[in-house]
Length: 398
Ligand code: GLU
Image (cartoon, rainbow, N blue to C red):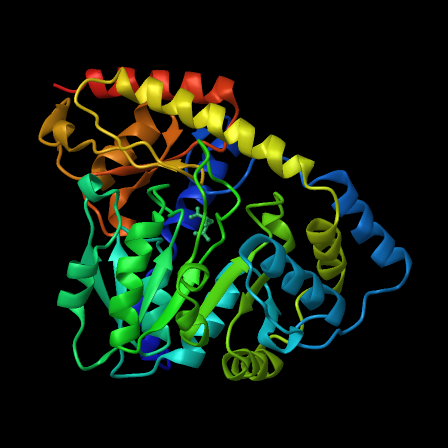
């Protein structure tokens, strides 16, 4: 048989999606799996958003739209950035895509090419590095520490920069750690980024899911000089429980947006017309469901942290946002399940799936081998049951 393209060998399947598929398959077999794996709100999409989609179908709004999104949705996105972030964009600086992931991939294709290095503070979400590699760029992983709130410092950034560095990716609040960048840290980074003329890709998908009065900011909000070298990746999935609708968007300099629009016009055409109508309803409609959802996440974060604190030798920083915690479980490495020694977070996660029927993503996919990512976007009841079983399973190791 003929060979496939070599680029397929450069990446592996997404471990978050792979674990989700496995958890769902085990559930379908009748196992009582509690899914802490996938990063997906467990709430239904608010009713008024669904109704806008039904209306779109009834009105026959089911044909091609402009490839980069409808003017109506792009204007709603501009208004979001004006109101939430104090950032002014014109619709020509916006591209609506098939989810935040698609926006990110378009951005990487526009900004980076073979020979370019892109700094990726890690642990980082599983898909940044593979998407950069597909774009031909080289991700440069810079390890951050729990002690520093899993944020990169100006000094660490400065050290990682070479003549080939073209950009940096910031994701705050972060998937997988839930930690968010404070304003002082961002301002320190801004000075280094400006001096070195780097592109900033800021993935703000968890912007609205913040707790304890944390004030979200991204780099161009704090340092307006960065506006011309920043591209924001964002989307509706997390804020409005709209993961399946696939609406992401980017905002940035017009030349980047037009570049992404060009790529999109040749590859995917427009994101779903019906989802775009739903997106307008999400952005312009009542926001009380967002407030309620965030309050639930905050309660579940606290519950999750208190249950993890009951497990001996598991440590975990307190995240300011998103719906993940990222506990260090390395104290359990080297312990035995029967005759099998568990040495890595992959092995520990596999053991917990089997023994505790808890699906949890190992830290390795995020570039950290001592941790697990627990998504607490599950009911309070399941958090209690699931983490109770996790504790029992960890304590059963010898
Ligand atoms: N961002 C979510 C997660 O990390 C969705 C799955 C994915 O695209 O990775 O679980």
